[in-house]
Image (tube, rainbow, N blue to C red; front, side):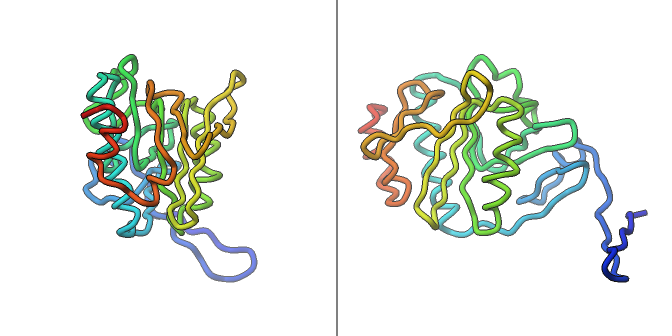
Amino acid sequence: MPTLLEKPESSKTVTLPPKVTFEEFTRMEERNIEWIDGRIVKYMSCSFSHEDLFRWLLSVLSLYVAKHNLGKVLGSRFAMRTKMSRGREPDLIFVANENLGKIKPTFLDGGADLVIEIVSPDSVERDKFEKFWEYEEIGIREYWLIDYESKIAEFYCLDEAGRYQLAEVTDGIYHSKIIKDFWLKTDWLWDLPSEFDVLKDLKVI
């Protein structure tokens, strides 16, 4: 039976959803969900601008990584198990060749090498605080926070003490510390130029 919790300030009750296992979570067809402390949390559907940026990043990163045989770029809400009681579905993840063994048929068993979250109005606190500390704790080496609405892109990298530090963006260009020789102009994230033109700049085609 679902647990009923009584709020101290009123007689109202809150019904918590039943707990499910991580395996049950990975088999669910419903998307925009995550597995938090054994329970499914449902989030708002993504906006067009969110999905358009997601599509652009997935295309550029996937082709760059494939060209240089660096690992795998995964999106489409592929689950990533971050703790024994937590399963996240980042917008995009990069897994380096040396960590491909973490990729299971339906989830990534542990932290990716790089995670990208595209911030939505309902995910600001979750992405900038909750996931920030969680990703730092499990050792995800690079974390991109892209806020399309505010036109702000932040790139964090772990320091020697295992803490995230805001990485430097020079002349509007960010050079990834994890994806070898990959760089991007932050303005690209808002303008979304042709992927073909970007891949030419990156010498992929």
